[in-house]
Length: 500
Ligand SMILES: Cc1cc2nc3c(=O)[nH]c(=O)nc-3n(C[C@H](O)[C@H](O)[C@H](O)COP(=O)(O)OP(=O)(O)OC[C@H]3O[C@@H](n4cnc5c(N)ncnc54)[C@H](O)[C@@H]3O)c2cc1C
Image (cartoon, rainbow, N blue to C red; front, side, top):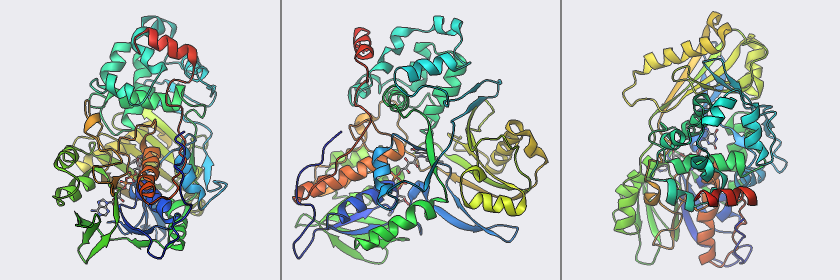
């Protein structure tokens, strides 16, 4: 738990420092919140017309004459996302707009199923319980495993785990452990695909970190919450009102073209319409956004930093298909299910089980709102054909949908997630740069803490704000994470004995 740096609770002078926050996803919104609450004057620039970044949502007109909100896809808000939850509490102190899903079921095309509902939450019983309850771990498979290769899983530390395993692929690590094939596919490949990457391309360190966050490093396990209304209503519209109440100048539909340092230590932020000077800048962009803004800002930070940013890459494209069906899925279908071995399908969600708008549509039409995700697709994938294939996989997983007519559909092809390639850790930007007034936030950032995905975006947003607040003598924020090492002394010493 990094404690807040001391300082004044709020800027009290006549001319508060000004900061440009570039990017209105979780990282940018967190940084803007953390700065504005301390009295810093923030201008938030977001290229898209709506806030939320990869969790943005927007209205669409459906063929049946109704309107609905759609998004870039289902997100699981895990209970160990302490800093993200801290952000959401600004507008929802009891987190009443999040609702828990009872289970995280997994299903393999071979018929095997897994569930985390009955798995104990306390480590190490969480991992042992999963192995004991899972049909994918049979006794003869366990005997075949290579326990010494698995020992590093028991004591994951940041950055040490990256120093040891960043040069190995997630796939090769799993092979060396000789995980049972089915478990390999079902539980662990799913982790690496949550990074939108093929396990052969993904750094093993990143997968070990996931294992630590969800299994051995925390007692919240793999159970999660979801917003009970579409993202804009449940999350971003209330946060936008909160930020405006704190004087934030919100500029949506405003892409930043370049950022240039000024002689007095500030920055000029240029958009198509104007150029504005700020005392500091937070770059809270996705990999492609950061790469292109920095590419057009040749005086930012220093050469080495700009060269490292130029190496960032997005993970391969993914497809999120939202389907409005004219009949309901079977009553026992869960709100969310991870899938493996069916082809490109990674998960299916049934929105009327948890999201307010979908059950209202489903009740009116006696239909169903279903979402299908397919990650790490080839760049050259033929879109129409892939969308059709995904629908066919839904028919296999939930056969009752074969009889359904698709009332309307939306297919989002995107590639906005960072790739964490084998050996890429040291090239990733950190929160601080060589320029004390230029900081970086986002899920692509190397934080030095055991956080990932949305929680890495939120945590790095607070860290970026804190780096600036420190310079202005303002108080920082206490951040919470799962423990930064294996939780259990016995397991830690076991890992050490194995050279971990
Ligand atoms: C389909 C899907 C499912 C996911 N599921 C989960 C999940 O279940 N759990 C989980 O923890 N994470 C999940 N993630 C990952 C999660 O969405 C991200 O980790 C998180 O949203 C990253 O936030 P961010 O602020 O770092 O980046 P982003 O949300 O990408 O924000 C960057 C912002 O910068 C803006 N921008 C870019 N260029 C410019 C410019 N020139 N000027 C101004 N603005 C610009 C972009 O429009 C964007 O709004 C999922 C992601 C996807 C795509």
